[in-house]
Length: 324
Image (cartoon, rainbow, N blue to C red; front, side, top):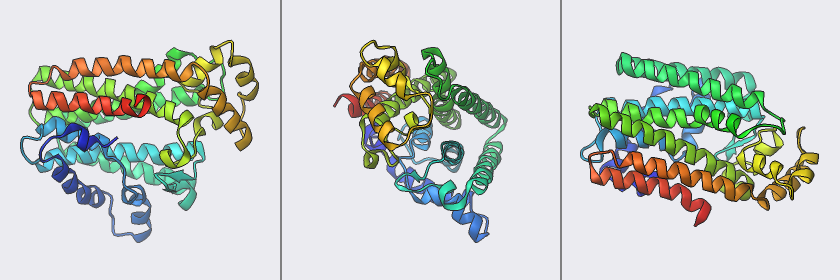
């Protein structure tokens, strides 16, 4: 999935090129060690989906992004990067974006403090963009934390419910996607109804994105993911494909006998194969389609037909990985 290609908006690729040096400069201190830590995942690349959403919502590709619009993209990307630093400590991950994770390379304490530093830099940038955006980003950070706590609280619980799962992903993933679109709309001076439509689109897109990730964690390879496949299973994070597989009479009993505790590689692979062969994958794809329909309906509320069509293509490009 390439968000710039999917959106197909003029100036967007150039805007994202302009964002990169701003992103690096925003976390560069002059301390060589800290700079190595804070720029580690920036240098590793990434799709930059959240700043892409912010810039697309701000400009619609009609003209190059202003500095404030680019900084809105930097602010949301820093929150995302900070969440990756913290997540990898929680998960004891060793690989992220096909490179060594920050916690593996520099240690857990440094990864946690560096993630906090990224959040502080994001907050400072948001404050420079005005009180509304600063408050919005602060509220979003609270929702991210709530979602993460909800997920951690249910770790290794084979009785995790669908409601608990959807509450977690709405906070840990969809909230920042919604905020990315909203910040873009605000920095672009969009009218209130369009701000609302773009915010709803971002939330629905975020739900599709997480559902897609949770399917791929079961069916994709390590290389395709940029991290070990089945990592959520091994770490006790039972996503919707797993929840459905556990409830299925054909796969549930065998899968339940494996889960409830950390998994070594052989057990992880066996559990992953069980989930992949269960109705859990198709059920999760169906949920992703439902949220994709919600996203398309919200995109229709954007005045620019070019932007609305680009947003709809972006959602479909996410689904292509699952049903293509």
